Length: 286
Ligand code: ADP
Image (cartoon, rainbow, N blue to C red):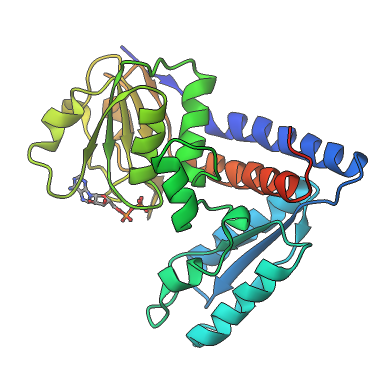
């Protein structure tokens, strides 16, 4: 069997087009264009690339760029004060603190300055709690993007065995909760899991977010399974994921590539969250 390839770039483009239309409708209805404040601390090159792309695609969708760049040696109090300013600014609909922040900063305390209604990364305690309880809220962008890819490809989740590899607060944990919300039977595997391949082989839907290149091979995949690779690793010969694409493609039914799979969806969902946040703040819901 050769897996069908999930084209994340194409789905992401459709989501961004929908968002651009939504922005235009909001403005036409008398609202204000959503504003996105990306906050970058320091000069990590990978983070700079991510933030640049977020800014470019948000302005392409008709949003207003409120980017802030802080020096890498900024103090905790100064960083918190900047986030408080953005929180109070009615032109700012969404605030995204680019992680990881430099080690001397307490990033949990920084995220805590972002009001839940502007928390477009879905990282605040309130949004995480709403997700845990299955109530509406802003969802973390990467797992939300994975859910959208699964929906676009009509992947059946009710009653399906889903395995999530990884339990980070930004990806693995919310991913498991979103799958549970769609009635999958969910197993979360992590660094202490015994016999990872055996656990993964149970999966009808396998989502891999461990941050380890080539972790998942064909021996960990049930024939016909849907495999979603959240990993991104920069090698000398380009980008790779956590999944060995070529060998898994021989076994899986549906498979995301790296690049061109989950990556573009993350930014698309950030834009969707920012539009949703702006609508709520401006009373233009539904
Ligand atoms: P991400 O940002 O993609 O969520 P993190 O580095 O924050 O990545 O988290 C990696 C996750 O992967 C952790 O939850 C960890 O338990 C899990 N993990 C790490 N190594 C393994 C492994 N060998 N097998 C399964 N899961 C692993």
